[in-house]
Length: 274
Image (cartoon, rainbow, N blue to C red):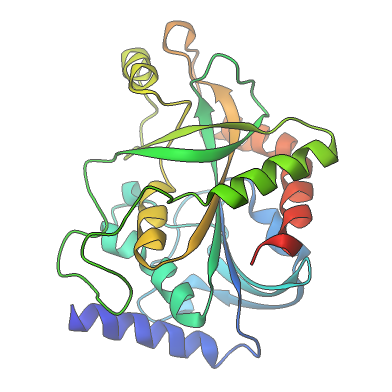
């Protein structure tokens, strides 16, 4: 554990030497959504591979860099791309950036992703605010010695997705003229997309959407006492009985189409996130 804490501290110190402000809000930008980082004013850009112990991103559509600056009048640090368990990293590595951002001073985290829509009422291109999740990755980021400096051995997960932030997001979506879906996100390990029978199972478990990220980071954020807002971009219909072939390119294309609403939503709610 001492080694892990030391690695986090080294990552924090390296970034602090590069930036002039203390970020208040962290952003994790998923597949096809990283363009939001280009809206950040007076950006300081740091590549993942330059930061001590920071795992580089290997997935197409993930730039693999931190962007620090101002957005919506708030000091932010954005991950333009993220780390996935299926890339071969340990869960500890996947959530390493969350603890680094906490060490830099953030109090809130907005985490985003591209996902498949299991709920039959969802359409490709919808945005969904996450109300809860299912951890079906087969692993857990808090296994091992607890880092007491960040949080308790047994963190509460009853409000992992901050209720006030969820209501704020829904209100802002109405003001912007579109409906924001709400539902349960099932996190799986990937990298294969789900089979029809797996999707039927997930629907029976109560999942509204499925993806290969987000859950480990939110668990770590809850452990570290961060207030979290989760936003998913529904890129395809993942209904088991009606499943059609899917590719990463299709996911990226639909995320591209939903991007204007996503950017408008995040920029509208940021001023009221605190």
